[in-house]
Every structure is written in C-alpha cells, then in structure tokens.
Image (cartoon, rainbow, N blue to C red; front, side, top):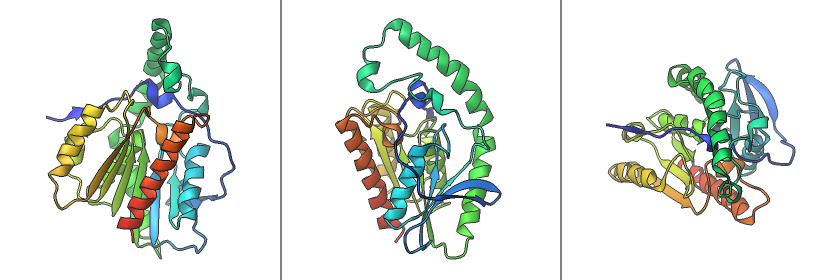
Length: 270
C-alpha cells in the first residue's frame, strides 16, 4: 500500500527573488506560457517547468528558467493552474524560514495550521490530479510536437514536483523533482521509467528524510533507470525555489540545486 505525503504550512512559505526576468510570454497550446530561449534559439534540449502553488508568474521560477536558458536549454513555464495560482501575499504568511519557525509559539503554530486549512485545502481540491494531469499531459504533448524539439525534460517544485515525477512514467526523457509533496510512496515511483533526480531538504516537514529513504529504496531496485537523490542539510520545503536569499547557507543550497538540475539534464537530454 502506498503512503501519501501531504501538504502543509511549508508550501506557503518562502521569499520573492529580486531581478527582472528576461524571457517573454506566449500562448502555447492555448495556455499562457513564460518562454526563455538559449542564445542560439535551439530547442534540442527543452525543459518544462511545473510551478508550485504560486504559479507561473512567480518571479523566482521565471528567473530560474532564465538561468536554464543561459545554460543552453529552451525553457517553458506554463500556467497549469488556469489563472488560479495562490497570491504572493501568502509567502511567509504561514511558515517563515527555519530559524524563525523554531521560535514560533504554540499559538503561532496554531495560526499557521488554520491558514493552511482555509487556503490550501480548497485549492488542492480544485487542482486535483483528475483536473491537473490532463492539462500537463496536453502541454507536454504540444511541446513534443513543436518543430525543432528533440528531447524534453521536466522540472517540478513542491506541488508541481509530483506531476514532474508522473511525467517520468515514460512521457518525457528526464525528470528533476525538487521537494515533492502529495507523492504516494511507493505508488508514484513504481512506474518511473525515465532518469529521475531528486533534491530534498533535511528539514522538510512534508517529506521527511525517512520518506526520502523509502523513495531511494524503490528507485534502487530499478537497475535500468538512472536516479539520484541529494538531501540538502537544514533546508525546508520550497528551498530550491523560495529559499531565504539573506542566508548564505540557503542561497548556496539554491545555487547547488540549480546546478544539480542543469547537470542532470545535460546528461540525459544530450
């Protein structure tokens, strides 16, 4: 029987990145999409970004897509929430960085829980798998049929990381999943047939180190499927996209996760 890992306050925490995205917004397959092109315009190595609950307009994910484009990938960030992403106001409203979280009182933690119940619960229902997966499948199929496209990878964050893993069920060429949530263990991993890289935080309250070890055990049995898992010390849920930019340690973890994904896709999309 599979164990399903849930969502919580961590999904609403994090910080906005500074900087101005340099890509453009297009309509692709009838869906608003942020596009970041490599300098040579090549689609040979394509990466689709699946956002967390804050969606495709979050500056953080667009700036990261720009970085992938600089590394030679053609990057797409589609709106798979149909305009219903959570507003940025919730960043840090429910769970601040780890050093602040540890000082929260019981009352403060209770407030966090209430915010999650009233905010995340209804959103998850609206964006359940039966609604979301066909949207993502359709977008990926559109990209695969785009002239000039060769290999396609998917990177996902938090809520989007699970759908990235599901695309690894023989839909794309490689997957990079950062701090996934709502995953079924072992269910979501049993059918993975494509190279899978995971970036997880040791302080992630939604995917414990024990859960990560279970995932590693499942993937280790797939001798024909390349996989890797890196656990980032003291990093909370959302660190690879919404980490604390004022912390040198957190900034380094974000940079290392970016390098992890780029190296993985360079290996399996080339």
